[in-house]
Image (tube, rainbow, N blue to C red; front, side, top):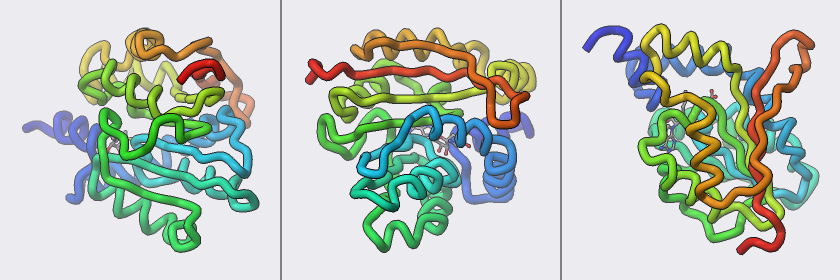
Length: 216
Ligand SMILES: C[S@@+](CC[C@H](N)C(=O)[O-])C[C@H]1O[C@@H](n2cnc3c(N)ncnc32)[C@H](O)[C@@H]1O
């Protein structure tokens, strides 16, 4: 297996070896802005229950934990990399002790939560790794509360570059694929917007997907 394949594998599922360790460092350095933007777009309230799928090092979960600390909310995370589960568990150890965070090993296609249990769901740099898009979006729709919102953010040019370097299989990252999966699962008012980041330079793509109040 060549270096490009090893990097691609560890981006999809960071491992416990040296490459996984380097990828984890890179995720923290390169993706913090995308994650912070996703948390902002979620309009999290202190009493919300919030799920992050594919949390990686746990930066997004930590940002949500900061918002919900004054209320009755809780942040949940599911990721199918054991080493990311360990890293996020360390990062959120205080919140876990206080019952404000729960970090779980698992797959987006089979989430360990009840129907309609989450006010908000977010994920970044993740949907293009899901082997069965419709199974994933159906499951996310199931756990979202009626009236709830799911957000993902990305920077289009970074995904084009990742594909050109061989880190992502051709086409899997195309937002249209994900949006189609959202519509098929029943999400409403699915919308892709371009938003200016806090640095007033970076433009983030943000995909909003709602479950209307009259849905079960
Ligand atoms: C490129 S990393 C992104 C991590 C973080 N969200 C970020 O933006 O830096 C992709 C993450 O999604 C997780 N992941 C990929 N496919 C998954 C799946 N089917 N179910 C749960 N987690 C998954 C990986 O283990 C990894 O932690």
